[in-house]
Each structure stands twice: as structure tokens, then as C-alpha cells.
Length: 128
Image (cartoon, rainbow, N blue to C red; front, top):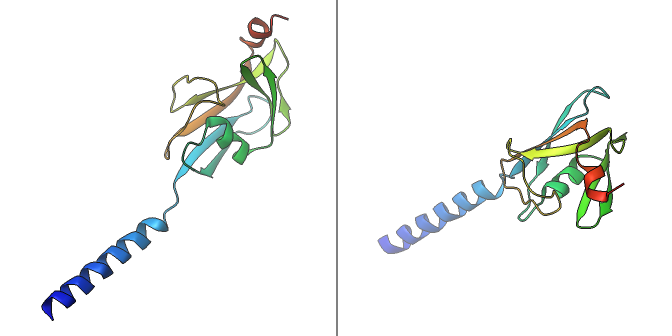
């Protein structure tokens, strides 16, 4: 009898613990700084395993991209479009400059910051 009560208590404890964790979604934060084009935004995106920085951005905003060789440039976020050689979209994860957004995986709790700034890269990559 005592063993049955002990086992029942243990099963109840496990079920309560699992339900508490199952209800807590994990998120990443996507910050979008549009420069002088419009007000900055901060969006919480539900994190999924193996999510990339690009996927998080695509869940947070309307995104247009342009592939060049092994690179995929973000050309527009929410209709704020970069001008080749003038302005472009760059990002960091937790303040660090990562690899390509299509390859950079993120973890729950990470902050991905996209900034619309002076273009210092596209002309050197596509040789135009």
C-alpha cells in the first residue's frame, strides 16, 4: 500500500513537472533598426531547434533577399530596401558579428539585431 502511494505520488510529480515545462515556449528577440527610415522594432519570435538568424528574421518581418554566389544578402526588411553601395542590412547575434545569416543558428534567449547602415560589403562580394 505504501509503495503504491509512493509510486502514485512520484507519477503525479513527474506529470506536473512536465506540464509546467511544456507550457513555456522559448523565444529569440529580433531587433530591427531602420536607421532614419522609420522607428525601430523589437519582436519576440518563438524559437525552434536549429533555427537560423535568417529564419528568425523571416518570422518577424517581410524579408526580401538576393543570392550572390555563396552569400544571401537581405535586401529589404518591411519594405526598407538597401541601395547597393550606399545602405545595406547587417546583423549581430548577442552583439557579436556572426557568419552568414542563412547558416548562423541561434539559441533560445538570443538577441538578433538587424541594422540598416552604410553598405561596406556588396561591391566587394559581387565585383560590380
